[in-house]
Image (cartoon, rainbow, N blue to C red):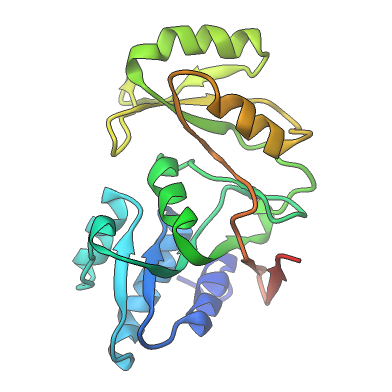
Length: 225
């Protein structure tokens, strides 16, 4: 990959936050995989790095590169999680779940002392909502939730894979909602999570501590105030 690629530049910059004796959560998606590949080349220069994963996809990718993945449930702490995002607003809130791993990504993020997102500049938005909002749901409730979300004017669509419902790592379905501008992401997240049958929402509010933004020739560091 070209070193002028914005995703590469943001992933490369994230290596600056890695040091010995850290327990690191590895995110899911194309930008996270660039970081994982870079980390696999550099990890030998560290004495004691422990890695955990947010998805089966990430685990398989990392292990092919020779990295050892420790199960999340076997860890007592996570110092830092590095992940991508589908959208990031000016308050460093985001939409995640385009890769289908939002539940495990949020569990790992919420249990991390620090979270860094690596994105290219196209992911920066003034307001969230241009990217479809993923909502992970219990399959049993699928038809009822599709109707409920229609009534809420969320423009829902069941995510498919090869013509069948996409299945998450936790054996759930995902409904993608084309909402448009989200006026209050914190309020919407709470409202959706209170609906019976909803497992998790792809709104990641007040989670990212640092967002590394890659451009064609530079990176910018955004930090939560």
